[in-house]
Length: 262
Ligand code: MG
Image (cartoon, rainbow, N blue to C red; front, side, top):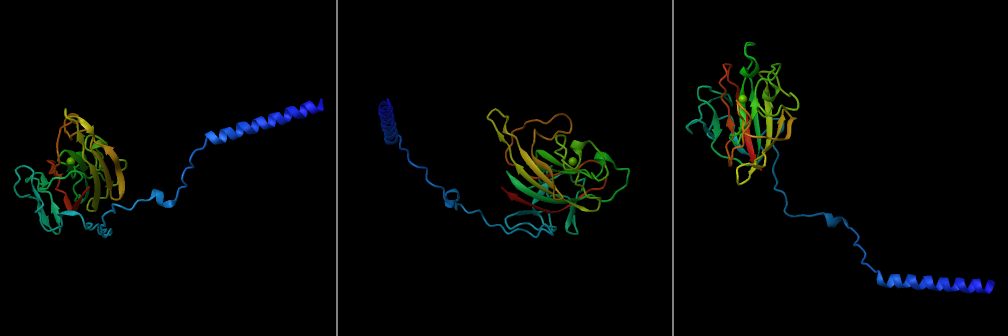
């Protein structure tokens, strides 16, 4: 009996060895190559070198287009009739001349990074809400980032400083007091349209107000309309337009305006 059990065990062992060697012969796969550090590194094209500006003075970086350097408005024209921009340049700044109307850049832009500084002058308390230091930065002449005295001056939130006007309020109110300089850094991505005149990709904007993000890659839903809802209007590249608002408060001032094409 014991001899029979030994024989059966030996046969089982031989059988399992045969199956195992058969499997090894028919199931051989190449080994995955071991990853080396260089496999996930690439070297070209090298990013262009840009000398950063002095951040203490927000000087323009080396590849920026200077739109206003404190001396003249040669980069700007009247939005009304393309005549010379009629705002008042003085003391290294430019002050809105409400009689002259809106001004716009002579050049048009697609995607860009825009730096612009603005100051609301101290003024009488009788000027309130939208009638207090109202201006605006229009992106591609279509979409307004609101400029307003929003320092202790309440208004509808999607109309305060840092809002996409009549659309999206700012994430926070980063406003400086009247008489102090505010800074906008605006990063804008132009829309793409379908052939039948709708947005394939809506325009998008990030706004940094005095170093604080107030619009974070916000989707712009359409044109800026004072009355009614935003519209979709097919357009190409467009200028930066600065608003001369019809409110009776004193005109605001701008300085140190530059832009980088992206
Ligand atoms: Mg405005």
